[in-house]
Length: 318
Image (cartoon, rainbow, N blue to C red; front, side):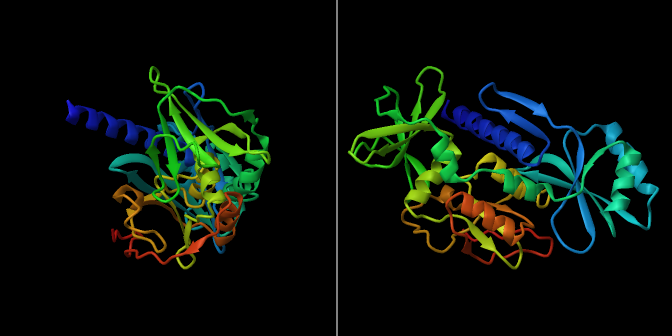
């Protein structure tokens, strides 16, 4: 029985990670409230970088669309390269990375027009999304504040030291992030609990991802690492970035983040569980985008040099 429960939990985890990766890669949008997934329309968007113009196919794709793009690309042989790179995460296949590369954006524009696919080649989508997202302070200010009241559901409290939710409430701590679980539906509600100047407790209902970064920011704990030589941005797997932030980072390359185990500096192994050593590492993220995302999350990037193989795979050293 315990084995079946463990397998079910793992399948749910992998399924959720797969869906969130699809969203981060721009293939779909997920409405968590209605539990609906909507396919994004196909579009060829610019990738950040200098030199050759590189563009990425995002959105829903059908065999017919892929064939049209391949046929169109053949008409520009010598002036355009068409790359298809398979990818997977947790041994689960994800949509292949499909990119076009040319000396000028006009060649890619003509190829896309021939294939009947929309384009967005003025600026990288990653840059536009990073600029569009609000900051942590803006998010907190926009949420309705309510007088504190108890909720008779099982409660876990986010621990900034272990980067996990720990069982039980911590009523003497303020501010704190508390996660309540409905015992019947298993739906969760996260509350950001603070005190006003008079010492009265208040709470705001928050998204879990934003809430964790609120807690980390107020605790002045920085958890985002950046390798400036290899343009790698990493976040703890237990503290994933909010969804638009993950999309901005993912669309710098079209790759899902690599999941690696690393003991990074500044994290006490006595406090962290092994799971907290797992990191989501995003590829080809320019420093200006990584810095913008970090600042908006109330974080300061911490430098780190990852060890990679010739094919770009990041080594585990846990």
